[in-house]
Amino acid sequence: MSDGEAGVDAYLAALADDAARRALSDLRARIRTLVPDATERIAYQVPTFFQGGALVSYGARPKHCSLFVQSPALVARLADQLAECDVQGATIHFTPERPLSDRVLELVVRERLAENAARHGR
Image 1 (cartoon, rainbow, N blue to C red):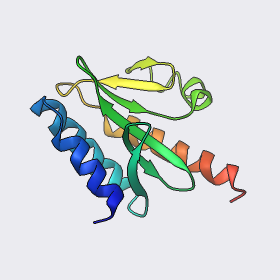
Image 2 (image 1 turned 60 degrees about the horizontal axis):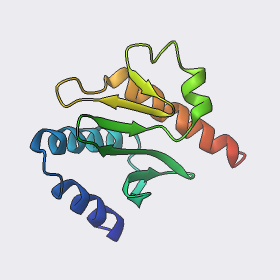
Image 3 (image 1 turned 30 degrees about the vertical axis):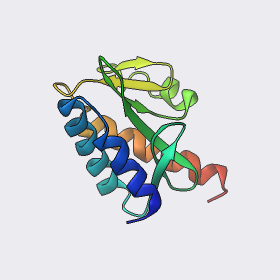
């Protein structure tokens, strides 16, 4: 396990809300399945996946969990496809009772990978 993964493990372990911890652990596993070669570490005080740059981050707040998309332009471009979500800026809010759908998560991760690749001329 890398120091980055250990930091993410510590972040999740420190969450007081068991439901949020389970929801974010599940989200982490789902992202890992989509981008198995990505690295992860704490960035801006939240767990962040990196592949070709920052990919997506996630975190828990008192009343919701968040997926930080890292790209306001992407969120604007996908507005119709994210209509089912609670979107605030470049962040998608969800609750443990209503996690992000696989469709939305795959869409966001796939599009972020494409943005990162384009930025690096790949």
